[in-house]
Length: 238
Image 1 (tube, rainbow, N blue to C red):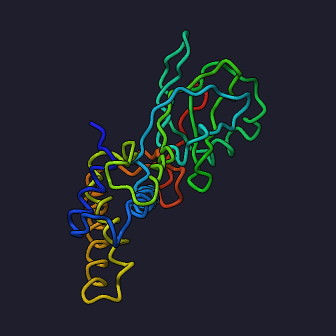
Image 2: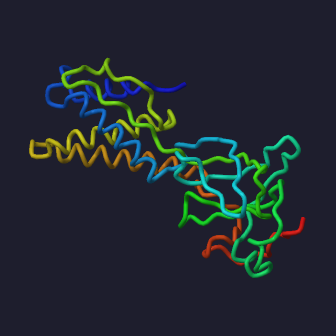
């Protein structure tokens, strides 16, 4: 169930006891909410997981949809004739074994994909894709900003739902309260309150991280990452 942005802002208004929204106007709360969503994206891109079927372009290099930030996984082919699973493999090993793989004949069915976190909005496929190839993928989507209401509005004027997954609503509120109290850090105790809320925000993301797989499409022993141990190449001719 999606959580309304005005609900999160209302909780913040009540917490700060600024029910008339004089010290912290509602449009300011909305800016902090939008900033908080982007901050969560930096630390937990999987919190904005989105599934899509994408049309491949001709060749080996593919791009995420326009709202994509980072690839999470490529699951399968998604054409009428093929739903074959697509497996991750090492581009480094494929380069060594089949140096001209970027130039081999294309295919409508994809067998492997490769990903480099240094270029998060792209991935590569083997064999090279034909125009008819389609893939089902998961990726992190850019959060949608909540539109700021007119100056002087109360929290009821805020429209739309938060983009972050519902389980992060409390962490988002802590980020917003961090920004709110940081604004008044010169007042007694507010600097400490700001730091306490940011610590709660960071801790919530860190604790959740311990029970969630990392966002990047990585399997155990994945040789795409240099810290992983060397592994045998996945057969490219299967």
